[in-house]
Image 1 (spheres, rainbow, N blue to C red):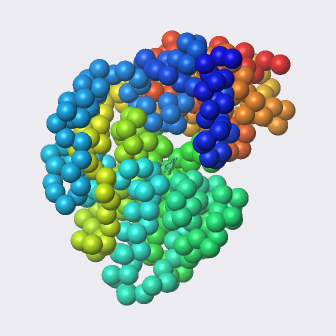
Image 2: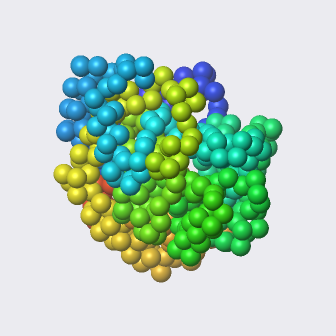
Amino acid sequence: MTKTEQLIQEAEASLLHTYNRFPVVFERGEGVRLYDADGKEYLDFCAGIAVHALGYGNKTYQDALTEQIRKLTHTSNYFYNEPAIKAAKTLTKLTGMDRVFFTNSGAEAVEGAIKAARKYAFEKDGHTDHEIIAMEHSFHGRTMGALSITGTSAYREPFLPLIGHIRYATFNDLESVMAQVNDKTCAVVMETIQGEGGIIPATKEFIQGVRKLCDEKGLLLILDEVQCGMGRSGRMFAYEHYGVKPDIMTTAKGLGSGIPVGAFLMTEEVAAHSLKAGDHGSTYGGNPFAAAAINAVADQFEKQDILKNVTKTGQYMADRLRDLQAETTLIKEVRGMGLLQGIVLSDAVKAGDIAKKALQNGLVVVTAAGNVIRLIPPLIVTEKDVDEMIEKLGRALKP
Ligand SMILES: *Cc1c(COP(=O)(O)O)cnc(C)c1O
């Protein structure tokens, strides 16, 4: 038995079986490469699901975290801590928002965003029956609140009743959103680029139309940038491509580049009329260690000019994927932005099977809904890495 086989046997004896995992145990990483328990090398175009913005083994990042571990990892939010103060300043600047609350995950950021929107509406009119409009095929996380606005009924159904008062509209169809608005509506929530739903960017007309609708009707626009934010689209946050600003937004995944951390942010107007002392909290949220990760990531974005690489290599990746599309009947469409790209496969193959074959070829990719292969490498990936990915993926697509 290999070390991998042995570890998997042990894992399956005690872990709750909520994932159909690939039969690989990763042990260490370097740059955009991962190495498994038996020493096999992989090119990583998954990045822990769009998390490892800086790739593996960034020395400055590691040193900053190590130093923070030695100093102080946690204090609770009864007290202030300097790394969190710095991270809050940085993140409000990067997002153009005014106030931030730190969480430990994307789903928690979404929970906070929902609470902020409901509290804002409650403060305005004192009613307790407000509705939120969410999008079909959206994904916002697995906690009860986040699940309530997740537009895939199969994820929701076994856990009903959820928070309720949620209406669903069709992504990229402004009229379908308008049709759901009534005098109880308090917010519209969507991903700027749908991730799990199949890498579907919002159209400019749609997102600008929803922004205008929200302004006219006094609704809050909540943009979930947990996956598409933190540089992945080529801008720090994807809404910058559209010339719109949300009232409340969420971020996580790439934010800590491997340390579990998230945040929701809002404008001063929302902050002034929503969550007050006692309304929300988290034991760990924004602790010095997690905040040090955010600071180290933000620092590397600037020093390495990561956004420039995302734009350049993202364009290169899109071009090479289209070349690959021209060579095979199995790719129906290439779509996405920056280093968040999806290829839609024809019904002749299953994305999950292609991902498995790619893994055997030493390439890590994951799927998204709608028979899509998702390409979300570390943001430091090079054109040479893209060429290697294309070669390995191309081989996986051959019969
Ligand atoms: C991954 C994801 C979440 C949930 O984040 P977790 O950290 O897994 O809780 C929420 N929203 C979007 C858009 C995501 O992609």
